Image (spheres, rainbow, N blue to C red):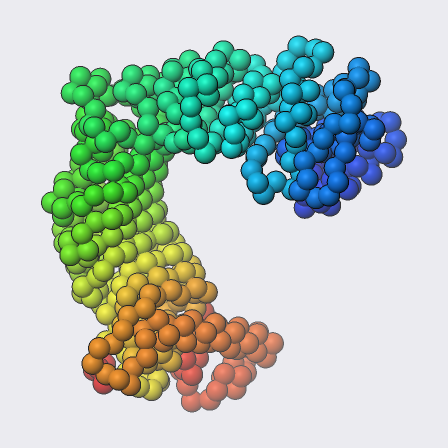
Length: 536
């Protein structure tokens, strides 16, 4: 390895530290010797947030700023010497992020923008820029984006809080200035990006608002496209477009994220597709959706997506009729996706999930890591099926489901170990929705025994209407959260005691006359009745 390669490797190690420490260290290295100056400055200026840092490196006679959050202003016109200093740093910048808002710590005055627009050399101002993030809140500021787009630009993110005809004309010209863009993000306020998208032939990821059917067809034929996030127009796409969205449309797509106002445009978009995504996300943000329509959508997904490819499925539905409910049958087609690692299903209304369906899901998805089905439940999922879910899905780290706790929700903590000492050591987060409980300490002991690594428990508030002795359910779940944390610390102490004492004195360390458990379960102080015991 050459000296220059070794030096560069050392500087890159410095580059992984915290932002403030990184900058101070790189600046010190740049001032150490001439051989360090170039590589250190390259790393120091590789990513730039706003223009203020660059302006402040120019002679102090050029600019002024009275106090924090006061706009930087120029005292005089820029000279060739000023521009020479500017270029010393500007050519090192590869990523530029600019946010123009009232909360800027170091805003730049319009006068400075106009001065930069009159550079005595050909644009762009940052000639080696490969990534540009532009978030502005005025029409004039947006026009200056032309100063930074380069032929080397590969990542372009534009966010705005307005749209207008002048901005649209600038947007149309941008692709000719940066033809190599492969990652593009444009929010819904940016306007129609359809023409711009059709000028880029190497797109890998696209995140946009509403676009034309022509743009959708263009994207569907790109062999490079891996990620697509878009908003569907409320009017369903035409039948002719549907016919063209057939295999091999979106042949390389790995992630699809669709936002729409109702199911009709989504159904039309998916009608003829055959895709192999790993990640599929749908958000329906307005309107009432019948249970039959949702069931039809889920069934369509099983026909649209390759069963072996899909790993993450997220469905979120807002603003629907609270009285609507869906049955467990709705979820059965999803069992065909055997490699599913995440199911996040938020229908916004009642979910009649039962033990049989949950068990079928658990057996179908052995690789499952995240499982959430939220909504207003009919509590048909029992403790037995919940434990079965954990047994069949050893990688599960997060679960969101309502459970009927009545089988174990009793006074006192019996000495029997629940489920013959079974423990699930991956689960760390649980959302039990509107699950009702009476005895927090008993529930906490059971959860701690079954899932000893659980660190976060959430359940939303429910009022008891009949028993004045009950607190709000959410308050009890807060107690459960605190107790589970305490039980976890006690178990950790017991494990250390056993390790320090050795196997020969294991019984004395834990307590005589008690059956030993698996190390991950703990001791009978936090054990629970077996699932075969009667309720209270």
